[in-house]
Each structure stands twice: as structure tokens, then as C-alpha cells.
Amino acid sequence: TATVAWGVLPFAWLTLLPRPNFNRGLGNLQRGATKLYKPFIFGLSFLYIGLYLLESKILSGGFLPILVDGDSAHEAHVLSLPVFGIITRAGSMICALLLIGLRFKRSRFDFLLLILVLLLPLSRGSRLDIVFSILVLIILASVLFSQKFSMRNKIYTGFSVASLVVILGFVGTFRTQAIYSDYSYADNLGFDSASFVANTLAPFYGNFVLPFINLDRFVSANSGQFTNGEFTLLPISASIINLPELFELNDFSSLVAYEDPVSPNGVSTALSYFYKDFGSYWAIFPLSFYMIGWIILFSKRFQSAAMLVIYGIYSSSFCLSAFMAFMLNPSMYRRFIIVLIIFWVLKFFRNKVRLRKVQMIIS
Image (cartoon, rainbow, N blue to C red; front, side):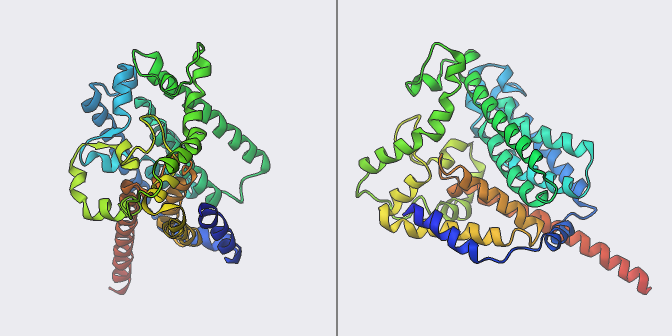
């Protein structure tokens, strides 16, 4: 079922799509990067940094929880405060907006600010936010810089990303094992080794190998017990209907795993949630629905800067579908709304400036 919905369907559909005009597409994207774009995005970036540090201070007692102790970092890395979380969990969105600004007008300050926003979650030992941001940046770079990337640059980029993934695995192990923390991810997976370096591999096993094993266990344990749309309708029920949850303490882990299907340390890929709702056969309909959404965004990625950012964020959720069903995460769809609002505001002021110039010419 999943092979048809997320493999055959997009392959067949994409082969029918016409090849986009790259230069015309860049022109559409550049229209979104008005003179007000950089100051607006800079302001949003500094707001993100300030709120993130303040949130860390409130949650853990320190601006850099990972330097306080391992327990503080481990508890804070999945939490966000009421309302704060709308911004502090949107680092990937801000990275995408900064990259678009870099594409059309580069400066050393832009690059340094992008690196700061990208790596700030390390202050809590949080790897997932960084992985999301990296995926979004890679997806957007493949669109924005595809004509400028030589094969050598692509190899360097691939090597850099692979190295960063290994470093993030080390960060997770360091956060939970090396600094005054009684919690060990490796221990809980039965992956424990006398070597700290070997234990660094535990997150890769737990996040990208064990989920497929857990999916088989989940199907066996939940045969015939279906929830009829409870999980696949989360973007609607929790994003639109249940807005009051924005004013409650937000545990990110509960947003992406409303029901832990296997164990306290187990995830079972995105497919477990679709199976839980409709079973092996009927799950093809919601699986296809979410994939059609991605295909539509893919076909419209050159239409505007807003569509490109939304396409990048949505695509990153599919990249991590071997881990969890992030495409069901309500907070992701709130980011889409924020992106649309940002570009609507920029377009509004751009039109006002144009109207003022026309009036001056007429008068």
C-alpha cells in the first residue's frame, strides 16, 4: 500500500509534469524578496533567537541548558512554552527564509545569522530541530542553486551533511550520558557498550533501523484495532479546531507521537499512524492524499517564495517518515500559515510603496 501511494503514484505523476523554466521561476521567487524582505526576516530571526534563549532560561534555569546539566537539556529539548513555541519551534522556517535572502543578495552577516539560527538548538542538545532545518536548506538549495552547483560542490555538500549527522549523533549521546544524566538511550535500547564512541551509534539504530522492526511489531499487536482517522486528521483537528492548545505547555514529542505504539523508546515509522487509523488496505487513501499534497507543492515550488518555503518544510517531513509521521504534526501546518502571512504582509507594503510612487508621478 505504502509503495503504491508514496512510490508508484509520485513517480508516475512527476514523469507527466513539464520541466520548469528555471530562469522564470527564479524571477517569481525574487519578486518575493523585496527591499523590506531582509529587514523583516532579520527582525524575525532576532525574535526567534531572543525567545529561544528566554524560553531555555525559564525551562531549565540557564540560557544554555546543555551547559547546566544533562537532565535539564534532556527535558528542555522537547518542550516549548505557551505561545513561545509558535516561533521557537519554527527554526527550519526561519532558516529557509534566510536562505532565500542569501540567494538574491549575499552578505557575510546573512550567512553568520543563518548558522546561528541553524545551530541554536544545540544549546539544548536538540538534534531533531537541526535535522529538520538541514533538510529544508538542502531541499531549497537544490532549487535555488541547482545551476551553480558543480559536481565537486555536490560531493563536498554530501560529505559535510554526512559528517554533521555523525556529530549530531554524538551530541545526543553526550547530552544523555556524559553530563550528569541518569538517562541512557543506548541502555534503553539494549545497545549499551563499554565504549562511549560505540554508544554514539545508538541514535542511528534507534531512529532509522529499529522503526521498521517496530512497524512489524505494531501491526502484529494492533491487528483489526483501528481508530478511523484520529491520527490522519490531526492537522485539521489540532491545528484549526483545537487552537486553545497553543496556550498550554507544549511537549513536542507528544505532537509527533500522540500514542506510543511500541515502547517508551520506540518509534515505528510514519506508516504506523496510517495503519492504526485504517488498516493495511484502506490506508492507501490518506497516504495518497498527503502525497498528492506534496506533488502539488512540488509543481508550484517556482510559483512564489512562499510556496517554495512551504514545499521545503513539507518535503522534510517526508524525508523523516522512516522515523515518525511528521506530516501529521499540527505545528508544521501553523508554520505554513505563518509563511503565508509573512509574504502577504511584504506584498501589502510593496504594493503600498508602488501606489505611492504612482501617485507622486501623477501629481
